[in-house]
Image 1: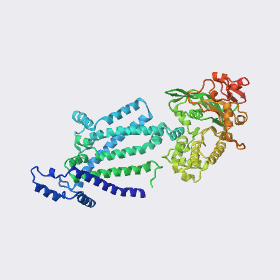
Image 2: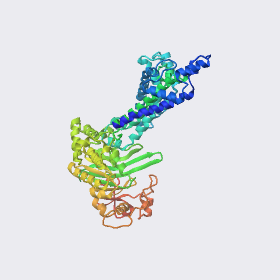
Image 3: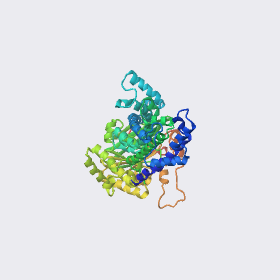
Image 4: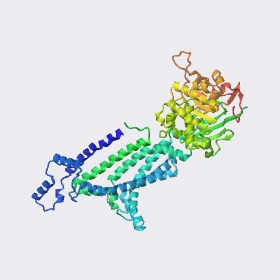
Length: 304
Length: 334
């Protein structure tokens, strides 16, 4: 437990370093004044707004002020919306998490059976088919797959809503769009680690005990491939929290991705910072959870 | 003659690789009586492990049993369904392996793995299985069996792990235990303990053992009958005293000569010249011809027949061609 306390405390310096990097990048990108004022604004207007927003201070003063405010829970105010930046981000967060979890579930439901299946029937037609499906799933761009799904299931057959968020049925098409690509990668990973596990001595032992093939495969072999599976799930979940812009746009899904890209275009520094902080926090948490799970899944793994 | 528990008759296990067919086990016959320990000796690649895995029907693709029969209490294991085979495995036929650590599943406790076959074959409930499991651990000499039951394999020493494997194998009171190099991965003192344990348990349970090893010391310690394999074939078979006293095949002689003796001082140990050829590199005729100090022209031309030169003593060598009695090829040797 001591180890995990240390890991949790380590989050603080990591987040601080991230704020510095993001702050620097946004600073280099230029100040947002030009976008906030009309084109015919005078030099005095610009200077006055810069002074009001504190943008005429040197970099280190601006960064210092930002960090001090942040430590007090104030992540700044959006230039664009005039609201607390973190609140704006947190408002979008449930939609993002909902979509991320749904997509991962879609991926797991496809990848685990398919991966195990193609490993146990190596080089069979099922295996070849699964490999083909994986290549296809990975190769289809999300915007294309999303639009195709809308065309077929929303426009032609009217089974699912076209876009937006609300009921469970709104979630299905975007989750499938995001889930297939992940499923493709996961299938390949599960197949290769199952193949490795199935060649282990303890599988031969399990067979020599007279166990049914199902128990040998699902208990003795699959349980041993869970560590890489958890790793890829954790990685993909953190990616989904930050990087689903295209799918969000296609399905008009009100998630963080859309908010972030708009904020970058508007040089809405406070929102960019808040978004990145939230995403970074998620990535770190997912890694931490994965490390915790490793211990549960493999008794040989113990942290000190 | 006492009825044999296991009779292997002209067994052929071939591997159908992309480069060609490898006859890993080629026309091997032997028999094991009840309570008997039969050892198969040979270098790596001699086919001894494949023979034992064939008996368990655990040969993986591209390997296949291509011919012959494996009669276990009169039933031919080559023909029976996989379901029937699974009922025998771990129950009447059990197996232990060379590397105890990798042979135990790292993510399940000893107890979990032990109770699994007890519950499966003896139809016991969870509580009874735990009780039997702990009793078995005590029987194989594990102290604190209660605690070890809940531990994971990596927490135990190599000797303890092999004891656990033996406990698992014997938990359903098998009639035949196949031990594939059971002591090779262990250090010498632990080896002696494990061998002693196995001996005690055969006496207690009356289990027959098929012992696979390359260690003649282990053979001398344990075996009643010895089968020497080379290149997938039985080259000599005899009871343990005859084999050590009067080895007839040059390969057996070579193996015995290359074992260091405790009362002899030698700068350099004897060894059989050359190495075991690759699967496709065996010579025509006698497979040992290239390494044999007594090689004759005939050996290179024609594969030697199996000849019985004494009671239960057979050898596959042209050197004994004239003196020996040619066996009827269709019959088993014992």
